[in-house]
View 1 (cartoon, rainbow, N blue to C red):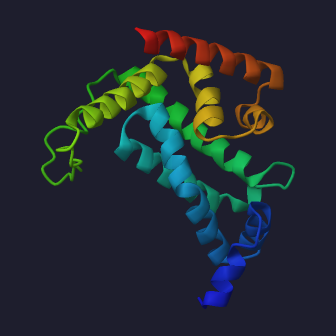
View 2: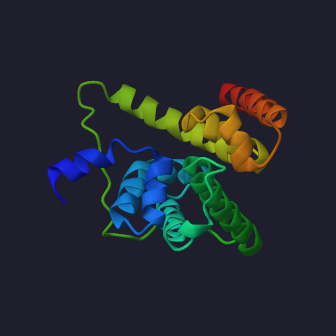
Length: 193
């Protein structure tokens, strides 16, 4: 693909890219993947608390976007459609986990896994504090019920509008605002502990 064609890809809205993809332009799909992959991984990770699982779910999501592209209708934003697919996969995975009730071993016994260790010789307490804070926030998020966790992640981490969240979760706008407020209150309480 030439530089000019690549530059033109960035001028299209998500909806225009989807229309082009539905017409057979696979480069438009590649651009959608480029735009959404990292955001989706971040979104799903907040649900499942397992990076490998999040990557698998995002892979399944993007595969479904590819295979079901003709089901997308322009009555909704592309982002709403994609986040809905991803959220449904994440919820399905959480239900499977509850049924299995097994211990996750995905982080144990893998020597080929690469871990980045920051250089904290100058101020080691800062690195430990930041890492502890991130883990505490993640644990607090994981402790929220799904109906509170989803909207607060979409709003505060993914920075989606209340209207988009309402469409993704298929609940009224007032319910979204209420759940986000209650989730924030619960998070605040848990983080004070």
